[in-house]
Image (cartoon, rainbow, N blue to C red):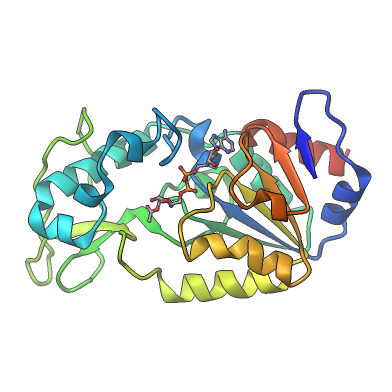
Amino acid sequence: MRIDMHAETRLPEALLDGLRNARHVVVFIGAGASAESGIPTFRDALTGLWSRFDALSLATPEAFERDPALVWGWYEWRRMKVLETQPNAAHRAIAALASRVPRLSLITQNVDDLHERAGSPDVVHLHGSLGAPRCFRCSKPHAELPIPQEPEGGRRLEPPRCEHCGGPVRPGVVWFGEALPEAALHGAFEAAARCDVLLSIGTSGVVQPAALLPGIARDAGATVIEINPQPSVSSAGYAWSLCGPAGQVMPALLAQAWP
Ligand code: OAD
């Protein structure tokens, strides 16, 4: 059922009861959850990163081998942008939800650290993290990076060298054509298959295998609630589609479930 969310919208009791009575809630996050912090999504027309930059030149292992300075510079620019932002009301509401339900698994496709900064521990990062660079050659983690100084997206910057083998250091994110971290993916599938409620927040649901999670939860009998200003390709198959920005919908959902 689709509900267009406004300031006065009263959510159905069936939805609120489902959340209140859930023993295990999975919160599945996409770029839209960080949009109100000022971090661009990937696929929104005009503002999305993949409408302004070429994914194949920036987000594949081949691109890094071809031009490491181009790729490193672009990710350092993104890391700088994230450092300049703050968690928004959606991040804070999700951290608060964890203290309302017996168990909450927070699974994100995002590479920022805004959930951690909002107070959520144990975030599962399916697509890696901007804050966890590692060696492209030997895969050993690289020590903490200084605050980046890149003023503009796309400026070339030579990557640091690995202190162990001298190889170039790469961003700790999952690129197109790469496998997701095995333990994270396994844990996410397991949580989706066992939860009572899955909240899918701010994702277009087109990037596999992460996009399988809401369907896994639904097929296992969980209630899936989507939160997105524009319903995603899959939302017709979910129990509830709350149409509105996460920074407004999530606090409203919590306030109405636990008045
Ligand atoms: P997308 O850019 O594909 O989708 C973002 C979604 O957020 C869209 O459905 C928007 O309608 C929605 N949205 C925008 N503003 C919102 C708001 N304020 N509140 C809630 N929703 C909002 O981003 P993802 O689905 O996260 O992969 O993309 C998945 C993956 O594709 C990313 O993790 C990234 C990218 O390539 C890697 O980096 C490996």
